[in-house]
Amino acid sequence: MVFDISTPERGIMGHVRLGKLPTSQKWKEIIALLGDDGTSAQALAEAVANAAIAGLEKAANDKTLVAVYQMLVDIPQAAKEKDFQAALKKIGIDVPQNPTLDNIAEGMAKTIDAISAKNGLRTDLGTMAKQSAISTFLEMSDNASQTLWGSNTDDMQSGIASFTDTARFGELSQRFHADLSHRILNYHLDREMPRHVSVTGRFPTIADMNVFQAGLRKHCMESSMIMRPFARDWLGKQYSSQAKDGSRPKMDAKKSAGFIYVSMNKIAKEQRQRGKDA
Image (cartoon, rainbow, N blue to C red; front, top):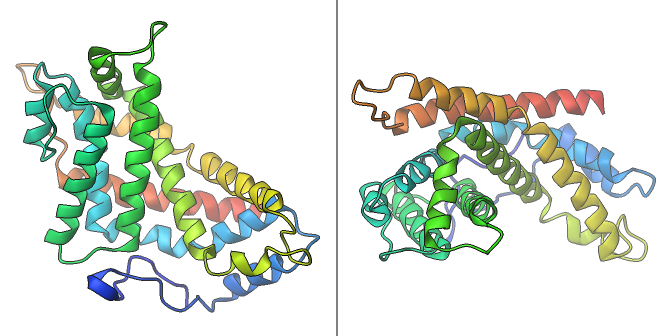
């Protein structure tokens, strides 16, 4: 059986926890690779990716993941409004006047947690999606806000609003999917990796394990590159249905769910192909 991280297994306080390690042949192959000092970090990264494919394919069933992605669509739209605070409140994110990036990130976290509670269940996948969205949002918004003289509140808002551009949104989406994929793959490794960090193990030093993590991160970045044109074209299609008054249509949860369903399956397919090519 391939372990499915989107399937509820209740733990303490209703949180979905990792159950028994998967016993599929693919996972057994990975365990064997962890014990083989002759295996390259990149080959090991590819093998781990193959083991997590089933979880990626079913990820779109997670309501929190859909809501998280919806925020990445809505927040840049809100940043185009003169009253940024009020615009964020309309999409369910409470922040003080003239919010900082940290204020917005905190508001995102609270809103996502409330959505999970409303759904009656927190999943590990939903938690990872929250972490990926906030991490990606902070990093990319901060970079987009920087000018030769630093940045101020207006620069920050303009930087966030820049992701309404379809090409920029494609990059934002790709980086989010790369980060989420990396977290999902590490999720499958968390219980096994510590057993192999020793003088005689697969990773004699932390530096050796970092080499592996670099290979895994590289894999996730490369396998998610297909999201740039896909997300760009998807957002452009939504914009093409602009109202006559020039306002842009709201990308509702149903449209975001459809996008997530296709995008996660695209990444799973890409990783499957990369596994065959490795």
